[in-house]
Amino acid sequence: MKKIIIFVVFILLSCSKDSPIPDTVVPTPTLTYTLAVTASEGGTVSSEGGTFDEGTEVTITATANEGYTFVGWDGSDSLNESLTITLSSNQTILAQF
Image 1 (cartoon, one colour):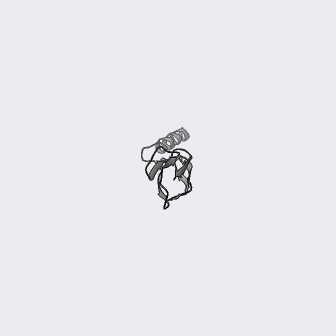
Image 2: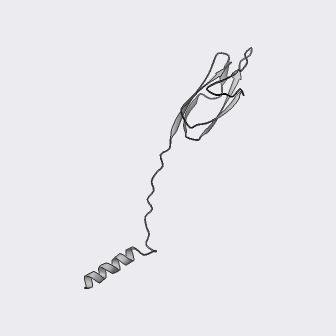
Image 3: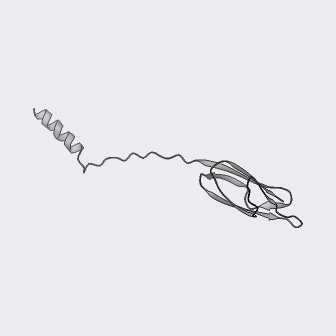
């Protein structure tokens, strides 16, 4: 009988609200994507890209050389010389001059 009472007391103490319950931390995998940035003849870009975590915003600026004009981005509908991309997939962007 004593063994049963001790066992029951042990279980009750183990389950009390004051007992620390270890938190189980499950790491969330971080997705990464590759951004490749190039320029056609006639200009340069401010970044060659790289590997970034999902959701990262990357701003790229195209600069035309003398005698050339920036005409747009292959890989984006934007016609602005400055382009901000939020990465959610692998992307290739070409500045066209």
